[in-house]
Image (tube, rainbow over all chains, first blue to last red; front, side, top):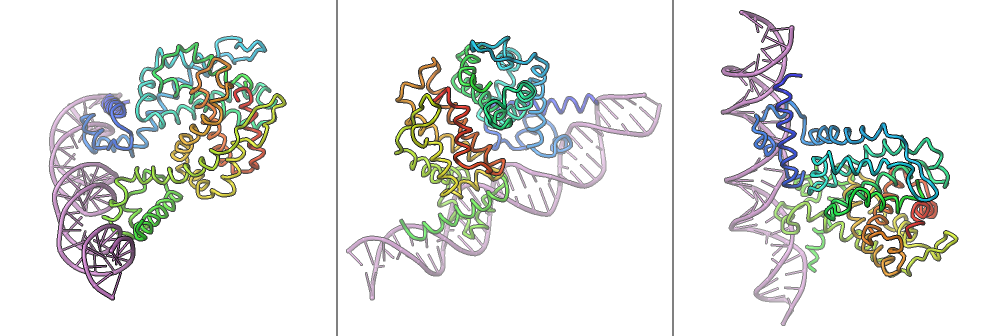
Length: 187
Length: 187
DNA sequence: ATGTTAATGAACACTTTGTACGGTAATAGT
DNA sequence: ACTATTACCGTACAAAGTGTTCATTAACAT
């Protein structure tokens, strides 16, 4: 890929991310991004059709990555003593967020968290499905499988959102316990 | 209140609601609303400062009402045989949605559901808090109270969202069972 | 060295926004 | 019924943003 293209693309992503930290998405104009990235008007439109596509591509990069790192993990199992056999996917994700993905964390803590939590959830569903669906566990209660996958995914995302909203006081381990606390009957 | 004011206010709400059914919120312009409501430009701004305030006032009316009808209900109790003592608040809300609030349902099924689910959740939290907080139940597991209130509220809203997304095939009673199925350890 | 591709900057018509104004008609209070 | 008030209308306005075009310049790959 052409170095020039790569550079402007990164300039746009950078400018966009910086602006997202300052004010809500819907009141960021293409003009703002152009000014902040210091590029020509036509250049922006050569890279992204609209502001929304820019957002989508940014999220695909960010969340695609974090979910991929968890995709290969051994599946979590629920034991009758209420402990996970090994560190759960969830704990893994939380640790990864806190240690590696400060970029994502800042977006999730911004005024635009709702947007990014949505993207997070979408990617999480795939992960949850691959982790739990094949185990018979999910069907035991006579509940539709995709209802449960949806419930687990959104509950986790909500947990992370709650955690960030309150200032991330808890350690990943503590927070993971909270989540298990409300999930044990399901998983 | 002046009849003229009331009429234009309703005209604006009506136009806005109709437009929300057609396309996403963020690509509805004030101009669109003015045209659809067939009112003067200045008139709109005499009533609402911005499009966002219009949205807020609409949601306050809609969700304030539905939550109020549930506010006075007797509190739900969880029994050891996994049944609610009486019809739960949740079942009540679902019935009310299906029977009386078709207006809300159409907004929740629109492309803009995320926005309205947010407002729904905010109002629901107050309700959940008043229903369950005073019972000692919520603190038993060593989990923060507002974490649980948040978890219950968002899970219910997610349940409704899932229900609508899939075409509302289940009856309020069935759906309520689903919800109880993932909630029983918490409530 | 050369042909290709990207970025530039300026210009374009167009839409939206929020505010202002005098004129007109419905309304509420007495 | 009369009057003062208030809301709406229509039009106009400057300001800002949008998406596209085009000729020019510079960086790139081979």
